[in-house]
Length: 435
Image (cartoon, rainbow, N blue to C red; front, side, top):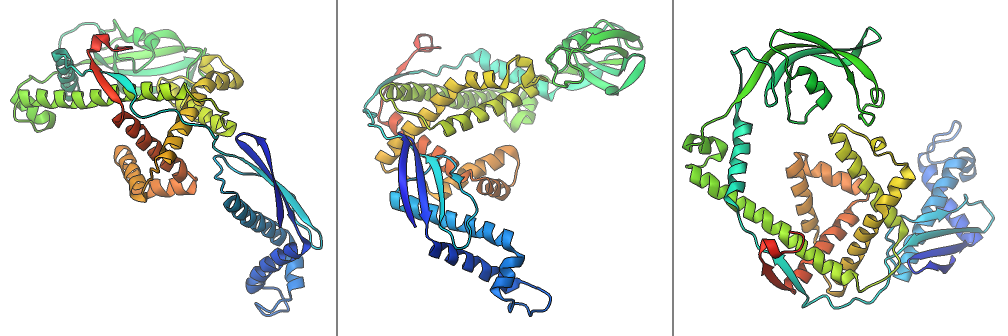
């Protein structure tokens, strides 16, 4: 086997490989031998079928597997000799090998760019001080009260207003026919909380218990259900009852129910401590971003485009999930797929550049990641999502996500090293940039 490396760009390589007839024969013979062991062909004992008969019967499978196995063996061998680690998937351009013929193919891949690192230790950065506003603690307690509240049906006769929970039956009609899937009985609809279409809530607001009403409802053009988007239906609604939240009194019993605290003050102290911890992580993250932005501004290199495209894919998936949680779809943005990708390109390029700079620093500092550290990240994922640790790990392994995860942990270590070696000046919140 002989090969020649071509530099397509500072971050892309193409390797052309020439394979001799002898090596082709050896690869085919090895695969035929594997098939021969288990071949069951009428007229022959198992394992005693002549190689030529096995090759003729299973030719398509044998030649395909022999070609794939030989290419994979070569790629690992060549990359080891070149001491190159592909960042992206390896694209192979090859036809199936043929007996008694030389075999040639090529494969291409992208690698990390080579660049000189600027100084990344001893940098200066400002970090916002963390100050707790007592009102923020009170707001959290109020949210806890809302979550712990019991709902009770009001006895007084009055119209439904924002803040109520309306108990309703509803059914949508179009052209006089009931629409399947747009109906419910004794449905509890919180009014004014943004959980449903404002136009639907407007139908209910002002109704009194026992009242039935029919009103037109036009679904927004960007509604997540494409079949309903922009459609006008007739909505029949019956209000059965109005519920309100019965908020618990703020006392020691409330503190006990809220989390096992002995007093309201203990609860407030815990909320303040949690707020400070969370806020410190946020302001630290802002300071780290400023440090990294300063380092990135001093380096310039070509980005591996396949990695950029993968990051764009990831951002669009995240955007899609966010929109779906709002009851919308990507179509609601009014952009073509190409326009959407271009709008996300700058952010993706920044993310990829950040990762490459941090990994270069990690390499310069000989930072490493133990398997236990990767497992710890996966265990945190399992705990936060309620999934099984082994299931998550299997998924990451089967989808080739372990190396990217390891790189993420390595990049985090590099960022921590930069921060620990920086001169951090604490500034009042009002004076902090973007405060």
